[in-house]
Amino acid sequence: MSSLKLNLAVLNKNFGIYKLPPEAVVPPAVADQSLVSITRSQKELTIVCEEGLIDNPEQADPGWRCIHIDSAFSLDATGVIAAIAQPLAPVGISLYVVSTFDTDYILVKADALDKALEQLAEAGHQVAPVCY
Image (cartoon, rainbow, N blue to C red; front, top):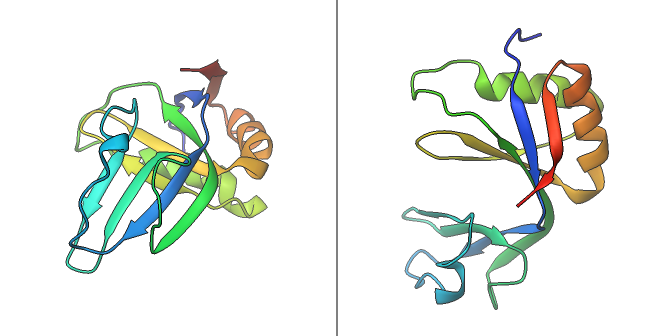
């Protein structure tokens, strides 16, 4: 197990992961959100945002909750995602990661959130109450 201990906070929204065609225009509704991730490749446009903001995606996977790693770390830091994934994998909790320059956001399915937080606390991470 990882010795890295992180400060975590849960965002107070439900999120969705949406797939659109690669040439799709980013819907204006997502631009003003407090957390949105937009990734375009030759094969798709993937958007992670608050649930329900995107109409008619090719695919939608709603029902995610977000755990914010409430610390900044450098881009060359190692083991950050492993410190989260290691306690979740043995109990079958999958995750979806959104990374920014300063930190990471870990999405887990809403019905697995309580178990995920329990596992993360048992692994020594500090979990704050639900925030923004």
